[in-house]
Amino acid sequence: MRKFDVIVVGTGPSGSRIAAGCSKQGLKVAAVDSRGYGGTCPLRGCIPKKVLTDAAEVVQHSEQMQGKGIGRTSNIEWKELMQFKRSFTEPVPEKQETSMQDAGVETFHGVATFVNDQEIMIGQETLVGKNVVIATGAKPMPLPIEGNEHLTTSDEFLDLDKLPSRILFVGGGYISFELAHVAAKAGCDVHILQRGDQPLKQFDKEMVQQLIEAMEETGVSVHLNTEVEEIKQEGSQYQVVTKKNGKKEIMTGDMVVHGGGRIPELENLQLKNGNVAYEKAGLTVNKYLQSTTNSHVYAAGDAADTAGAPLTPVAGIEARVVIENIVNGNRGEADYTGVPSVVFTMPKVASAGITEEEAEKNGYDTESKFTDMKDWFTYAHKNESRAAVKIITDKKTGRLLGAHMISSKADELINFFAMAIQLQLSTEEIKKLTLVFPTAISDIPTML
Image: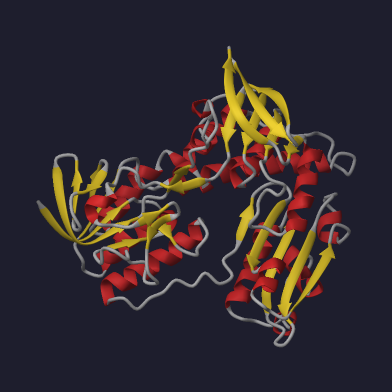
């Protein structure tokens, strides 16, 4: 039975930072993971996805410039692209574990389960922690669909050696839109099946509608109000039984991909043994990210039920809070103001701060300004068909409260707006800045 000041379960963006951060503060720390060290983002999420989406963006840029000075289109060589992607993912587990060991963390491999409120068992070994941090991340949500065992997860998609010809994506979130765009640019026949009338609900409706139109032009068919009832395998193909407006239809594909959301990965932890309360959205925590039922336990990232979105930057915010509270006692709280988010399609959709609906719901007296930017030089000289921005400001103070956009530059631009929101800057203050021209960021004063 080994004793530690902190036991961290999970080594993704939050867990690895908490383990190393606490160790550097002089605490004795153990970290454990049931899979390779590094977590979802660098191994099965953000990083490998970005390698693929950037390749798709190169192809689309080439297509857009046909007849505008570019005479040859690009194409995706899938096998080569996957080899390139693996050059980023395969070194991660060893590097991450070595980095944590260099920071003084003792590392373990295996499934961690609670024995009681402070004891964790890994195989035949028992660890006792003054504090236990749950940072196990998320996994695909079980879908109430007959034949759901035929679904391919995003983890599996991101490691495919060969792309099939026709792919159906179930659900209309980040995963479906981003991977569907990649597949379409790789030459696949792609369909997104969205149960409701609005996919990507956390983003501005107008921007999402423009994205849907852009995806359709790219070759991705987006089917709204289409419920998937059953998936059946017929030889090497799959039949997907759908219902739309009360009418059933069968769609056929070579692969059906799970894009219907994710839930915290908690089932192996035996949380009841540790008297740790949890709900569907994760561990039930107070404002200090501490379990409400077991004061020895903290949670961060996708495993915690907080107001923070399931994003890598949020995991970083929560990691800093947990380190502060373990080292110095409960006094740190997470601030999610202005956290930006991006859908890495082409064009990209981005958001930071509040939406119009949230402003109205919370009683803000705001001004909302929508600007179509597709004819601006930044986008016109690359023959882009869609670029728009919506700025939400406080009428009384002029402070920037929200920014929502669609464009090829949205992923970089939204960081500027997120900074302005977090620093509580007014539009007049932002307009005073001198920026490099011609760049996308130099358009910001005009947007305001």
